[in-house]
Length: 78
Length: 500
Image (cartoon, rainbow over all chains, first blue to last red; front, side, top):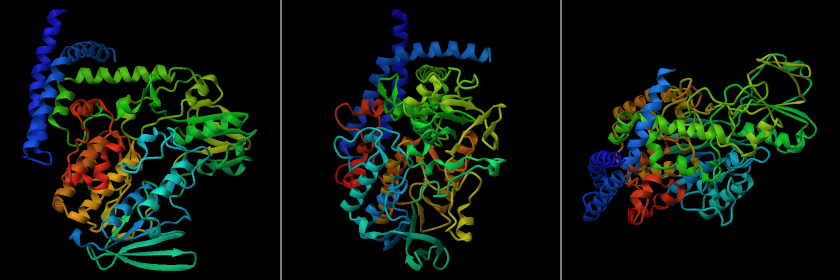
């Protein structure tokens, strides 16, 4: 169980890091662009994204595994 | 054309889209004339069928900066919306600009592309000819011409054949044996009206749709499961998906697939779709929910419909009509039903016959309609705009944002792409829709649950941030809270320019 939680959190953090970078770059380009407020806001959005992925990484992993099993079975019998 | 030099606008239609457009343009000092063929404003809300109303909660069917009165109930009845639209037109000074009882006969260019527009119309016997810098067509997807499919034997049928729009009171069906053809919102509404007073009610459906209950699992309003950014990322990929959406639909594909199977299971059991209706058939659609519910239209039936169908109060026949008989109809499954009244809830025909042939040709109309840049304009027909030619779950919001887009274009002249780039964008949209959205005469205008992506595009075009949620928890709200009209109040009022 601990291993699953750890794996999920690590995977979530990995996804979250990429997603956070994307969100930061996206948000900072949104109007009003290149203002100090925009950078702070973008950083906050990026940080929130990373935290959410880290928190829910295990759930995502479990749903992915369950989904993968059902998906394979469904495709095999279809 | 230089959109900032526009001084006059002719607006066709005084429904939701026409009112939203007129309000924006009038506020910018544009001289507007709104052509309305009826003697009241409101478009589809001015004269609906019996017991018609909005199919979404009240907070999803209101102008972003003009809320419905306090206490308005959900799934607002049509007459209340009609009154609300009249109040809107009075408040924003639109009403004096409407020319009632005036039908548009022809819209043509004054003297070639970009030269302005002429609208020929008539009020009774009096013909008008008006000159405008731009024309905005706000008549929605269809016309006022009912789509009435024909079947053999209609002449010998002794009962009444009517379009659902002619059903003005359930009393028309009292004591009758009624059949309804169709399975959209209006068809299920008509069947429920019939079930209340008729001796027999049948509904004939060729291919059922996945219904979205007003409350998911009987608890959660459907907007929480349908109108947030998280769900937007799980529906089939949009025309230009973000890298994150691409990753979700590739690396996380089993999760996305599993999510939709869970939704399928929920709908299956909540609505009892697996029950054996009528001639021992189920109402499980043949297409997967993520394709069916997010492509052609999204169906949110009244809760009683499936209950009545399961109990047999409404007899469901999953087949097609072969022919009329003298006292009924013969169906494709061999059944013959004896009826007095046949209600065709089969929608409306598209009719843009008032556009000149040259304009129609340049719009590039095909079997599935004509495709527009941002669902608003065609670069080859400068000065002609369409507001309301985009079908989404929250149409009043979409039309308001389209009107804001046009208003910003006229007031501030934001930079549009080149004509070639717009054509390329339109071609990509056409290819994307045709690749997976089932054919319909209005496929070109269908967006349904892709409205979040579409709204983002509109806002980004004129330089507003599409992220409208505010407060400390804004990032979380962006992800899981539903987007509603009120989230765009500052965009529509123009206050966003003061503080985005």
